[in-house]
Length: 199
Image (cartoon, rainbow, N blue to C red; front, top):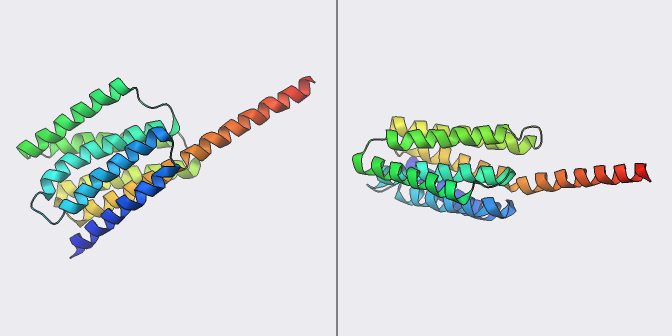
């Protein structure tokens, strides 16, 4: 019963994330929504026999896509060739985990992606403290999801941690446009002040 409620909560979260992502930068918006679709598949498979297999595929790919979204949300997007190669390797790792049943091929890239997210958001602490804290908390939720999967399998813990991490990251990245615009306004004001001094 708890697992069904958690799966429903994750599904509702993925729907909410679709709309929340509208506030993110265009480069990050598509990646957030794509990850949301992956986690929706995870929620729909929770009550089936394929839950573990789907998780082995979704966790590494979904978290890697969200790490790319975090990079694109505050800075320049990762070059397409690098992102494509990275995702191809992650997909291969997820397929290996699903075929062999060895969770390490899922958990290692998933944990690495969550740590990369934490680092990316920590670097934005001075420029955007609220978004930075939300992003770091989301990364910790994803680490919790991976840990829960390692201990209990595709259960309620995995689903709830995933829902919290996904929504928190989408909200954090939806603030990134505001941060960039505020920074640009400050820069323009500084240039205007310098111009007035020269006059």
